[in-house]
Every structure is written in structure tokens, then in C-alpha cells.
Length: 111
Length: 112
Image 1 (tube, chains in turn orange, yellow):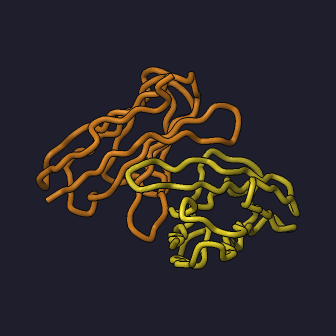
Image 2 (cartoon, rainbow over the protein chains, first blue to last red):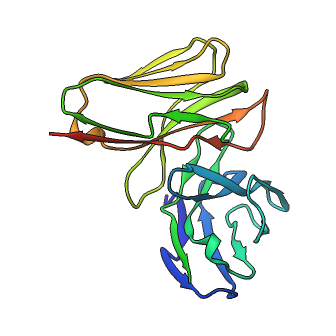
């Protein structure tokens, strides 16, 4: 099992550009989430999904869109990148237990 | 203000010393978790505590959940350089929920 995979690992964008961060899991987990990690802030929840076709907002959803068309995939879209979105982004999934499995992260810089 | 406050933010100690990291909140949590994160990687779960007053041990690490389910602590005995990393507490607020909330983290450095 690959677990949770994320692509790309690094990305540099210019202000106003759009892009999609990919996330996939092969554990048949129902729950998937996107977090951003900034220095001293821990991880903050952006969006989450409790199953295919169902998504909801987390703590910091502005500027991001998500969709969940399959159990395996949960892409995060930045519609118009801003410097404030410079961060490290983590995707996570969990089954019916409390344990979340995290991907390796995407380091995004917006100039 | 974060829902979960961790202290200290940074800790630098010598190999062999003991340390305690705290995770506090004014809210009740249905469970609390501790994760460890190494540079360039995602967090990895160490333990989940679900019952008020619960104590769990993982080799040299001892985790405690407060009686009121509002706080937790992580104690490391005889720290080793391999314990170096970012320690994060996280929890599901309220009786249930899908929104895992994280503390700000404690960055630990253990010098040989």
C-alpha cells in the first residue's frame, strides 16, 4: 500500500495563478482532509470530506475549493493564488478509527 | 487564540534529561492525540487517549489525559537524540466530530 500520496512535492506560483494539489489514498478510507501548516501555528484544517460527494469547510477555507468524486481522490484547488497561501499543505485520511494518516506534504510558494 | 495551547513552543535539552510537554484547552475533547513530525514529512500518530484520567505508556513516553478531558501531557524519560522533532497534540472537540484540531506544536531538540 502506498498510503496517502500527494503531488507535487514543491510548487512555485505567481500571484493570481491557479493550480490543483493532488491527493490520493489507497486504504479505502471514508474521511479525507486538507491542512496547511505555517510556522508556530500547528496544522489548520482547510476542507474535509466524510465520503464521496460530501465536502465541508474547515477552519480556513477561503481561497480554496475541493471536490470528492471518488473515495480515493481529494484534490485541493487554489483559484487565484495569493502570497498568504504560501505554506506547506498536508492531505490526510482516516477510516473508522481515530488515527489520521498524513501524506508527505506539498511545499507551496506564491510570489 | 488556538483551541489547543501547547507549551513550551521550543525545548532544547541534553541527552538523558527528562521533559514534559503540555497541551491545554478550555474546551472538552472527546479524544486527544499526540503526533510526531520530522522535517519534510507528515505527522505520524503516537497515541490516542479517550478516557479522562487515562495514562498510556509507549517505551520512554508517557501520555496522560486530564480528568476533565480538557488537557493532556507528554512526558519523555531519558531523552535521546532520536526523540528530536516537532510534537503536536490534536483533538476532536465536543462529544464527536470530524474536525481534528491541532495545537501549535512543541519543537524538541535533544543534544548528544
